[in-house]
Length: 304
Length: 254
Ligand SMILES: Nc1ncnc2c1ncn2[C@@H]1O[C@H](COP(=O)(O)OP(=O)(O)OP(=O)(O)O)[C@@H](O)[C@H]1O
Ligand SMILES: [Mg+2]
Image (cartoon, rainbow over all chains, first blue to last red; front, side, top):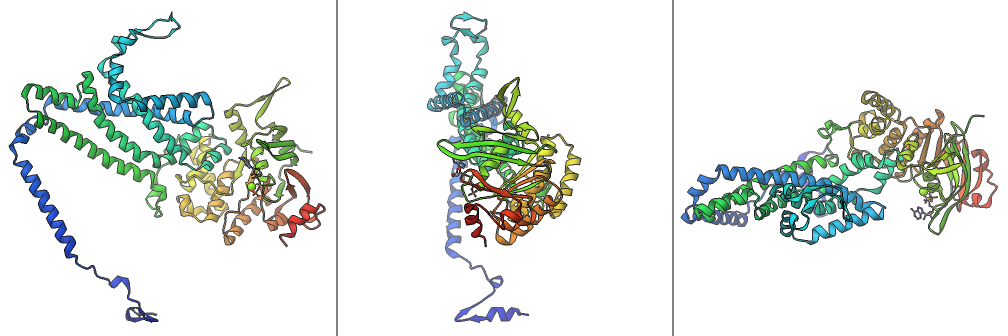
C-alpha cells in the first residue's frame, strides 16, 4: 500500500511527485479586475441607453405586442418555416442529382445552383412578383401549342412570390450544404448498405443521411437564422411581414427608431430560440460519439 | 449432385485499361468453405465484389443460387437488371469487410436488425430475438445497446459477422476480416468464423491467415495476377504446392 504521504513526498531523481488532487486554484487578481471593469462599462452603457428618451422605450413597450406587429411576426415565422422546409427538400433533391453519375441530372442541378446563388435574393423576389409581365399565363405551352394554363396574376400573389423566391434561393444553398454532408460520410457505408441489398433511396435515408446530419446541422442553423432575417426582404413586394408591419406603423406615427427596435428585439428573440434548438439537435446527432452510452443506449431506432 | 451456390465462369474484370480478373472459374458447393489466398493486388477482393455485383464484370457469368447476378434472361436476350432488382439479388449474400463498416449512428442491436426488419420484412420482435441469439453466439450479448465506437476492433468485427448472419444468408463473403485487427484480437474473430464453418455455412474467405485455411477450409484457392493458379484441399495446396508462384507465396509464411 502506498499512503498519501508517500505519494506526496515520493521522489524520482530530483522531481517531487505531488498528488494533483491536493492542488489549489490560485486567485487571479488581474482577471478579476478585468471582469469588473467590463461589467461596469456594460452596465453604464445599458443604463445610458435605458435612460435615453430618444430610444422611445414607452413606444417600444406600447407597440411590442401590437396586433399588427404580432401578425407580421407570424407572417415572418410562417415564411421562414415554409421556405426553409421547401428549400431543404428541393436542396436534398438537387444535392442527390449533383452527386449522381447521370450527367443530365448533374448538369441541371449545377445550372440551378449556379443561377440562384449567383443572383441577389432581392432581385429574385421582385422578379417572381412581376412574373406576369413576362408570362401573362402559366401553363405548358410547348413551342406555342397552348395546352391551357392559369392567369399568372391569380397564381402569383405576394405570398406565393415570397415563398417561391425564398425557397428556390434557399434550395441552392441547402443543396451545397447537403452535398458536402453526404460527401463527408465514409464511402464504405453506402457500399455496405448496397451489399446488404438496400436500394439507393433506402441507403440514403437510413444510413447516409443520418451520418451526414452532423455535418449538415450546423450550417443549416446558420441558414435558418439568415432566413429569418431574409424574410424582411419580402416587405418590398408588399408582403406584410414583421418589418413591413413596423414600417407601416412608423409611416403613421413617425416613431422610426422605436418601431425598428421593436422589430430588432423580435428578430433577436427568434434567433436566440433557434440557437438553443440547434444546440439540442447537434447533441442528438452526436450521441453515438459519446463514450458513456448509458443514456444514449436508450435511443429508439425510429424506424418503419 | 446438388446445384452449387456459386458458379463463376470465365470471369473477366477490368478497370479502364487495367485487367484485374482474367478468366476465373469457380464453383462453390453448399456448405463448402473456400479460402482464397494470393498476393496483394491479385484480384481477390475484386472477385468477391463481383460475386455480389458490387462490381460489374465485362465477360463471363456469375450465378449465385442459380440466378445470374445483375442480369436476367428474356427469351434468348440477356438484359441488365435494374438497381432495385440487383439489390434484391444481393439479399441472400452476407458480406464482412476488412474495415467492419458497422453503421456508427446505430447501436449494435440496431445494426443487426436493420436489414432483417427494413429489407426482409421480419417483425421487430423476431429480428431482435434472432439478433440476441446471434450476439450470444459471437459472445457479445451484453453489447447490444452499445455503439460501435465503444467496442474494440475484434468486437466490432464479430458484430459485423452477426449482422451478416442476421439475414440468414445462403452465402457469406469475408474480405480479409482480420487484417485491420491487432494481433491479439485476430483469434477471437477467427474462432467465430471457425464455428460458422463447422456449422455448415457456405463461405468464401479471403484472408492471409494460413492457419485458418489449414483448419477450417474445405478448399484453398490460390490466385495470382487475376487467375486461379492452383486449388485443392488445404492438406495438398498448403503442404505440397505444385505451382512455383504458390510455393513462393507460401514460403513467406513458414
Ligand atoms: N476501384 C478500382 N479502380 C481501379 N483499380 C482498382 C479498383 N479496385 C481495385 N483496383 C485494382 O485492381 C487490382 C486488384 O485489386 P484487389 O483489391 O482485388 O486485390 P487484392 O487481391 O484484394 O489485394 P489485397 O490483398 O491487397 O487486398 C489492384 O491492382 C488494384 O489496384
Ligand atoms: Mg483485398
